[in-house]
Image 1 (tube, one colour):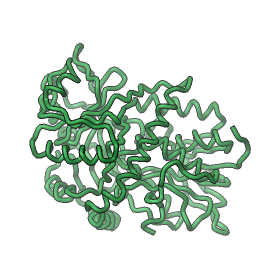
Image 2: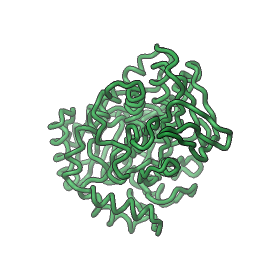
Image 3: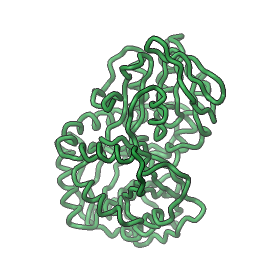
Image 4: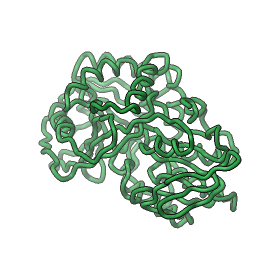
Length: 419
């Protein structure tokens, strides 16, 4: 481990921030993490816990616009834009429309695949470390479907995935049932992405924080960044509600809060918070689920973790708020027995978690140095792949700050692309 490269301030203690701190401290940087909430309260805790090289298609994909317009009029639907006249939402929507085409998807599929595969490998190496046991299982994810229409779409996507050298197999209902002998399944079939995996996010986050604290990383919770002092194309000081901090390098990993922060740096990074909900369910004895699954028509993620099952879903675009919209959660609950008829999942009254996925309008993350300021790097905007991409974000940040070439090509993820 090298020593004394200088000080780095990491803004945000989600998976991207902690991963950045992990690799920076190993590189010999002194790391200070600023988090506006508490360390146990961000989007990295309650998500589906999925590692998804299968997700090589950006959110801005062909067909999503037409589908989204149909869904927008149903408050229980998987995708919902909360009616709002904000300029940010309209600006985001126009950019989203511009990128929702096959050419955009095809152009960036390999870069997204490579970053996800690399990140998956980094999770494997973390899991082998002494103090890390976060229930990592690289045993695949089943993309379950009930209709011929979705089967056709998934077969086409699976073919594209195979062309990208991803390990995926189309299964019929009997083959799906054989993979889950303890559960009655009501599906037409599945695309089984053997390249995917899962983990238990709360364990991962706690173990990362403990490791970083023992490695000398300093954390400041409830610390809100108010402004930046700049001079000669450098950030000299970060002013917060808890005083000012100075460093040689600044890494912004602020998740859905990114645009508010980058605006203080004079940078435009369009991004909408995509609210998602999740809850845990304890199945009856003898009803355990072996593989994580996506219920495709319902757009619901199902992940066995910590002896229970986490159901998560919905993408609700609009300004952030703390309201739990019960119809959104009911949409998740009502979809479950359609695929798992023996599950009797009640509405999870007091156990609903929600968080915000940071969604750039082109479906690509913001990862790299910014041109306006020589010592600022962004690692944010992973959308629905945030947890999956965390370690790769962190390693890319450490490589950039230490002057090394990144392990995968991140040029498409330039933070300046909308500026």
